[in-house]
Length: 104
Image (cartoon, rainbow, N blue to C red; front, side, top):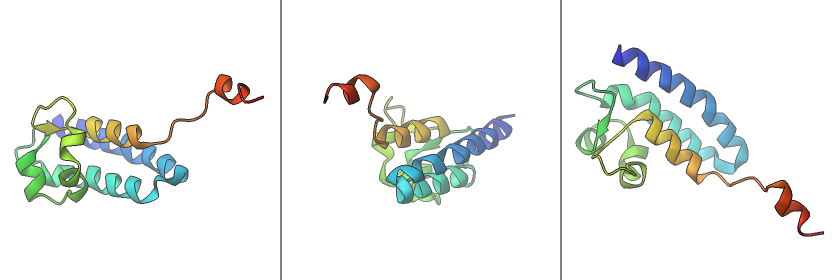
């Protein structure tokens, strides 16, 4: 069941990341998409999380390079949702209607 959830979460993440690429996040979004895809390989104990040790030994250089920033709860492990949240946090925030009108 955990594998099915990980695969399903990966599919959702991969579907969402191309939108980030359209907003100038191309390289980062591609790196994150590859990391999410490779999380299943790196998750050696099959718990749905990537520990720091698994990140260091697995094919997830994006997660390895950004592990501390992705692990915002300081659990020592990251999930697909953590990776997606980190990538979303790097995206530029769209201007709101009120801020766009305040310049007139």
